[in-house]
Length: 335
Ligand code: UFG
Image (cartoon, rainbow, N blue to C red; front, top):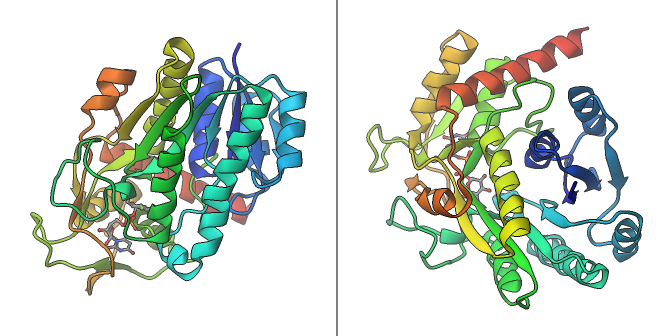
């Protein structure tokens, strides 16, 4: 059974990928510094899989932690999630983003190389395409950055592209991951006021926030609001399993979009979430948000051809699973 290291494995996408990997028969070790993950996530994972979860509490910037981990476990491949991910914050703190996202990757690669582990799946983002009218976006679209965060994702891809032929690299460009695990025991759990659409709507649905601000209704889209390619986090997690399997089986590298190819507007999401939670969620039209683009959708075919990946879960599934997760949390808090 192949053994996989998940850096950032207690985070939102990491924890869902943990479950998908275990379900697919992989042995998994999590490395996380819990800077943006709750300490009870490993327990929750343990309850879902009914088996112990191996977690190392440490930082990808700590070479000693990485060397000890590779010495203690015979790792066959790494999925590297551990990174900072807020676009706005990256403008305020560009050096933090370079340090964690680029420095962390370099430190990890050096430790992997020393341990002879040369398979890595890298969390990239549709943000590497910048602001483009080409929609849906194919993988060979030129990369350009519009924020320090995007810069770090492009830099990460470029560093990985310079590695020698004995490395196998999977670069996965996520579109907009949303939703929660079918168990409703893990999901996205931002501690501050959310920046992203679905976590914000979820807090309106629970009553923690009064109403959603819709950032602009004058875009050139069918209803005037921004259109994105939302992908269920469980589909995204399955994409990582397929990426790793491909690296192990073929030894060939790949760069693919992980999206559905379908665009949904902000108002589509409000309607779908309202249906999931059983009440009309209030919203107010606000000015456009700086840096937002009108439309961002994936050409999903390359992931299908190269990995056999296809997203299967609908917008309704995304909203229902998110609501099951956040409404379950309210019940837990009350108990
Ligand atoms: N939106 C609102 N109100 C909100 C939040 C968002 O109307 O309170 C709208 C946005 O204007 C946009 C859509 O909802 O039209 C989606 O916004 P998100 O903030 O959820 O997601 P983004 O597409 O802006 O950003 C996401 C990731 C980034 C990544 C980017 C490009 O959060 O990390 O996709 O891949 F860089």
